[in-house]
Image (cartoon, rainbow, N blue to C red; front, side, top):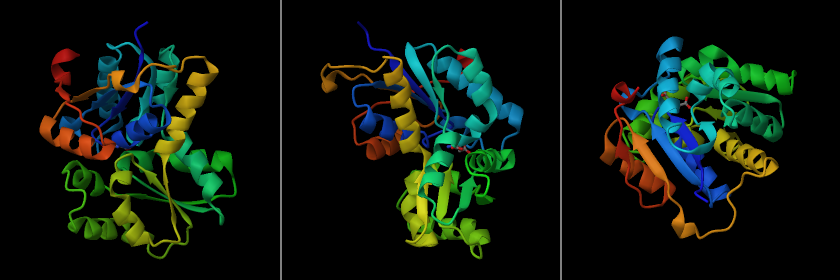
Length: 270
Ligand code: DGL
């Protein structure tokens, strides 16, 4: 029987942090990844535009045979998760609740900081999710609009990254927190700079691991996990709406697998 894939969507390369965890935790699954790099960043865009763009990506991924969908973008999760979950009859997993759960498990002081795009922070989705899990949690939130363009440039180890992160996080300087949620899937790609800036005592939380565990639990519960078979027969697909070579180079480095992305113009297919 032909394997069904896991659809993963993001505004760009950030969702690769989720894809990497899915590949690590569920190595027999095939992934179908869409990164809307031509229209990245989504963070500063108005709500309706993020909704429309996200729907277009999802519609494209749904033209493939997928058994689950991961919205590997916090900005899109904050806007469309409830709507899309109610429309589809496959499991749909976002990244905000998994990130919040993981932070609550890790914090010792109950003081948590969240960084994300303007859209995610404006939505208050993390603060709501954290308070729901643990009402006594103190949450401080900060939008960091300069980080996604740096990640999308692909120069992830360029030393200027440290200053960009330091400036972006300046408003958190006087704040007291022991846990920092990377509330944007792009940020784990530069977690080395973020950890340097906040210091070793602050625990960084990426939603990727927890979101992949949730996927694994849901698929296992429904008896939908890919079983057996040879790993070399995995057939992943990567689509980008922007620069293929840049996407390939970031994705190959981050995932550690050979891959060739395909270019898709969402304005034409939808
Ligand atoms: N990676 C995305 C997120 O998790 C969005 C970045 C952007 O497009 O602004 O929010």
